[in-house]
Length: 270
Image (tube, rainbow, N blue to C red):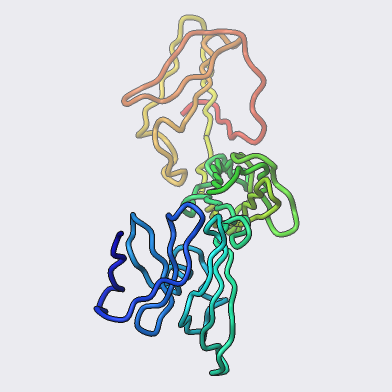
């Protein structure tokens, strides 16, 4: 014989009412509450077990299970009676088979922290790298979808869209193998950058003449750093090359003349 003990906090009046076919689970009543017993966990309040381990809190709201009276041979189905939410005595039956009480779990989507970047190219938009992920505790994530409003931006976890200057709210939806889905949202801000223009000198000379330019000679209204200023050096009036102003001076030798970039200012000499 094995004594089953008592519920925590109680020392009297425990009565067994049923046992599973293999003797591993016993049910009954202790004081005025239904209990369930097994050799690993000992005697426990049946209602607490159903809420904490089987997720039946909503189904048991307002109930008080007083007696567990019978258990199936496989130990999964328990019947008894208790006080229902209306205050009346009512019988109950509960199935401990998790597959019948717990449905598919929703996956989780993650897009990371919000991002802020600059329109570094000065063309009114920015290149964004978005890294998304999804996880599913009872299955697998089978699809990803990025949207901005109603516009689909991509159907992979990671995408690299180009976004115009401004604030953009992007949403990743992940879907699992049972059709459940969840979303996560990231805000991407593309800031406008004041791009300084590149100014160009054309230095003309005669054979064997070296053109030079000093940063001190530049028009102060341009307000550009030295390494932003490009100079066309043409020693022989028949060709030349681009070079930048280095601290002090910049110079070069003749080479085939490339096409001049549209919109660049040019001046003869300094």
